[in-house]
Length: 229
Image (cartoon, rainbow, N blue to C red; front, side, top):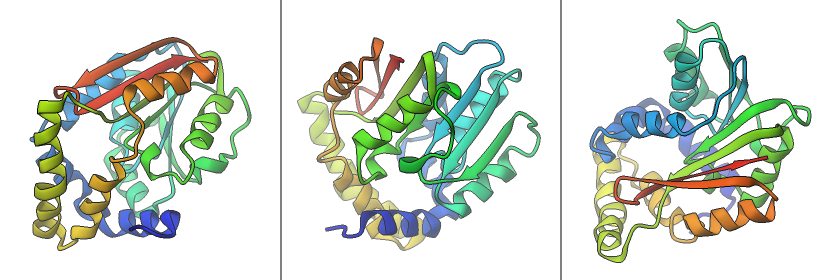
């Protein structure tokens, strides 16, 4: 359905950047910010840490990290310049954060650069999830942590309503807010083959990560996995 994924996804986010934040608020019923706070609260962040947030989008996770840990330096990376420009505007008051346009699958950072590496709702957009995870592991110091947060696989009864919402209601919201049904069709369809939390934990084990933990939010519709490098 979505050919030339990298080009398609890049154009999609460039196109919806201006309404991305408000639509996120609507489709999560206003819970998106509280979920992000829970996500970063699960991280074991050392003093003066260097933190990398991949597929940072409009920078909400990076912003929360920079605000909560003012002694740390946070770097947000994304391949959409329009999304990054919004992130920069939202963080003008912070001097411990920067945003860089970069391909997540080919990061220019040296090995063992960061103490924490996070990604939220981003791995689904990569052409190769395992390569993305390998890049996260490569740039994270030994003893540091990587974190993934994305749509989860809720129990069957909840999953019925979850699928109905994502496949039927969300595309309509896309039309209402941006006249762009395809963008929100993509979000729904990209969840079909996306790994479950159990599969992500297995991937982390194969990467030889330790202290693997998994957390569920919004009745399992959102899930986070953390592993120690």
